[in-house]
Length: 456
Image 1 (cartoon, rainbow, N blue to C red):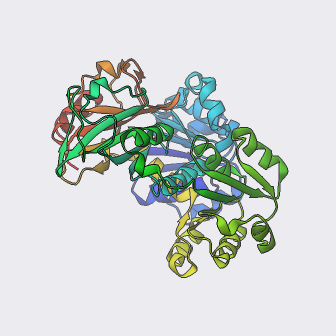
Image 2: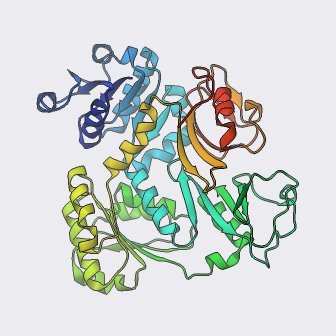
Image 3: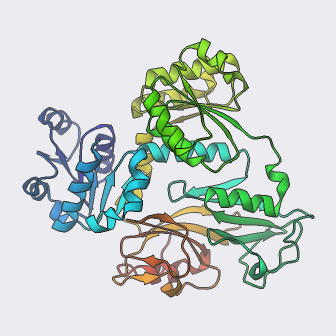
């Protein structure tokens, strides 16, 4: 693929290097000449020194002929403008990076559709989603999360006292943002229709937004969520911390955020007024002791300062907190600290740069789909693909076979659990739960560029 990367910061440099190593034709735009000279020696790519909001620079970098344009500078307006210009020049798909705090505003304003930007991506928000998934998985048996953490799938065992035993799926009053994807009964995966009746001992795969998953678990088997409210302490009210606060907005969790900057803490409180905001440094053991961090079920160091994050985690470990999770922004640090995780008693080391690279790989993939999850018997799978048909459609008119569900639609308007009349546009990302035997037929329906059956 012809891929243009704008920005040689930590995210852009990491992606340019990775895409080049994977054999893509990479062109890089960077304003600072010193950075282009540095990377010319180590990355096999074309380099254009200049302003990525300049049409002349964009054309020189080949944006008009790009299969994919990635605007990855640290400046949100620059990313949105350069991505919009690249799209209007002829780039097939454009993705812009933005900060976690601005993501919701950009999506809800409708500006992305008007600008022609296909998708937004926030490394810090994706990292926060991964941390939230790890915490939620201890309180609910999660199978997977997708749509950048906005949609989750969980396995819930139907209890003998559940109100849904013996009821048809068609009679259940589930909200539109919740689905029962399939049911495992006596080790057999079943794709239920409207007349399917749930039974004691069934394991239902429920799919929905996180708060809907929580409510479904209460309905289907309250015993799963009978544990006490988890106590979570977060160090850092920067982008990852803001993301965590927003992810746990509707969760039953006691959330405490420690940061020396009052203005950052105020932003967290605006998003989630139930947060306990603490002005202080988590690298100071006195602050941790005074705030009762020893009683936390989880401690997450998520500030922008890697060294402070490591020190805060070590202080929490010393106090006996477990599990402890660490956010590291430099990818080279992340690898070393992951290897030392067991020695340091740090359960998880998350790098926003690494997780966003994994997310962006779907856009740069030459394969028509990606398998996200598969049932143990291979009957059911969740796949991710891009809608490539030339005409706009709705979920209802995709013509999917029985048993197939559209779990999420991802595009300029954000990530959504779609309803039957939700629109699907060319370039939108689709997450589908499908019968494995129908994969080829389903991909034919959503792709105009690919035909026939596909193998993994």
